[in-house]
Structures are given as C-alpha cells and as structure tokens.
Length: 135
Image (cartoon, rainbow, N blue to C red; front, side, top):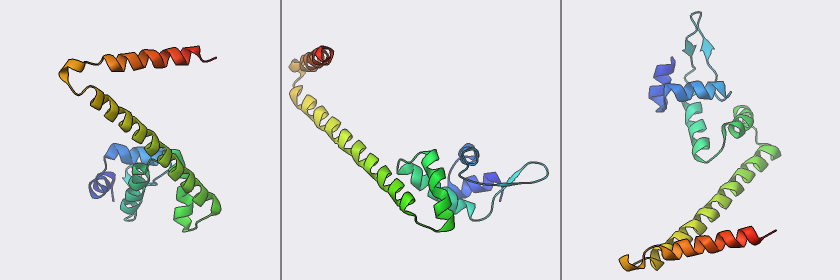
C-alpha cells in the first residue's frame, strides 16, 4: 500500500509515517519512481509505534525494542528497559501528583477574591531566598 493509504488506515499523518521511517521504526520498499510501498502489516506496526509513544517512550527507545518485537523474543534486557520506562513514568506521575496537590493548596488559599495572590508571591520569594542561600 502507498503512504497515503497507510496514513488513512492507521490514522496518522503522512508526515508522521515519514518520520517513523527516518527513525528506523518503519520500513518501506521503494518503486523505481521512488514511491514508498508498505506491506499490509505496516498498519499494525504503526499502531504499535503509536501505543509505545503514548506510553511515553522515545523513538530511540522504540527503535531499540522493535527488534525484540519483530523476532517475538523477550530478552532480560528488553524487559529491564520496559521496567525502567515504567519506573520513569511512575516518577513523572508522582511529580505531577505533588504539583496538583500544591495547586490545590494555592486554590484553597486564594478562594476569596479579596485574598489576591500575595500568598503565592510570598512563597516564591521565600523559596528563591532558600535556594540562593544553599551553597
């Protein structure tokens, strides 16, 4: 199938497909005129790539893992890499949770229109002073 058909089937842009190819995530055969032609299995490959991207993996990490997927082999290294990515995502979730909790505290402390945002500014000044005082 040609690139436009793959884009339609997989729900991604032609530009994204070209990027995947550039990153070594997707392969296409070329016609004599240079047009890309993909096998029918390419749509499944694109869906897998999209799933891995949505899990927060980089194109480099995906490229490292795809040979194991293609060979249908799970290695200790590939499992360790996936576990490390999961741990990274868990850390991001924890950081976002702390940020949300801080935002909730700010919202609660500035609940009335009369309160303004003085509390936020005072905390920022105090935080900057404590950071600059640290050697």
